[in-house]
Length: 618
Image (cartoon, rainbow, N blue to C red; front, side, top):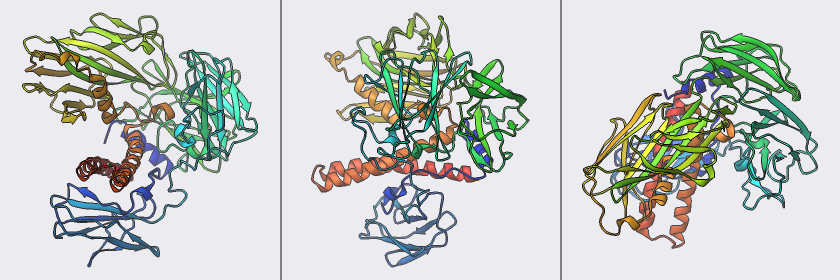
């Protein structure tokens, strides 16, 4: 089980059911895809009822003249077909609905997998809703509310130190009028503030005179659902605006998300507290607080049990009651986001993770230039304590590899970050909840054709990625667990990409590059590294998916959310490729190559999603 996975599974146990997947399966229906784990001449057909979690078992599936029935996983398998067989169509009837795939030809080197689904019910569909069009004064290019939900966007139409919030029930045009919205602020010392304002005729409120030392959360209860933003920190040079939509009130199975539970006492709260190593956090001191305009008020203190649970009873479920939990472990305070209890007959449940305070990820691309390997890198750090962390004047040291030279950071972070000779970067001042990324440059001297990259990780690294130009004599010594793959940048160049996860606190990332030549004339002018790094970062991913919107999550839970988005994106890209090919915008060779790459990525994502669904169901 992956790191933090037990926290996600505990939430399943507390609610009595796994969270529903939010993939729009209509985009997957009937599209054949190569399956490298199947031999040539084999086909699997998966049949579902509108959701990946609702497998249609014991259903007859026809493939040409052959028939098979779905198993407990909802799959029917056909073997021994002749590679190259054309015009194959899979058909099934589920609940009186006739389902049919696209026509396809069996490839010569692999099998085929496809999915058939009945139309999803309203509860199976993703939470995004039709967009009726943004208001006239929305920022140019404002996406639909489901995509923009809970994200603060800088704007010069809102005064300095102010936040404008638009509350919607669904898409644009469904404003929640005359509705209370709360703004809860918390600083590094655990001081809370609360403002409560009612929306106007456009569903809007403006919170003014905010403080940069605080992180803010926006909360509302709409039709019995809690609607909440991610942590918001004031922009330095203007106001900000945000849209909240009840269509995105439930982000799924994540810690800090409060859900109804028949395992919790009626009118009470059950909390599971976990470490990052998947074990329950026992004997942790915790307090439950209400947040009012005068600050916080403690309702009761307790200690986690051996299985990491906390329980409070006889709590108010009113929408004007906002709570927060403070847990203290080994001198570090962890705070939940502010929350409402779920109204109704059941109790409420949530999960907290109390281990690391800061998570770190590193991505870097390197290019040979004179006698140096020059790196352009991104250092991503995430505060997972639920409140700002003040590192003071000395700051938080973010090491760079031993022997680095010429380090510099991007201008937008220059006021926060100082380069410390021989050490790396020092993040000074406060780090808000959520994640921050720092772009930087540094160089490593080449000695006798070799560079030894020794990168200290006092905070550990949850993810790392290093890429280097694939030169003719280059060899790289990397950790045994590292993934190695070539990446073509599209301009005829190939980079070697090494990546991995899970460097422990106090460990090191060690790579050695050998066989580095002096660059040929003109090599110094090939300044493509920024494009290369951007491609690598796009492929490699980010530190924590959706952390800015939903707070720290267990790795299993957040990976499932990310996979939902990846799969929808890949199906959309496959459809777009087919459309462009049909319209003559892509030649046959380019189309087949691009489709193969997308299908391979899609297959990896689907296999991982299957594994995670089965893991949670178990």
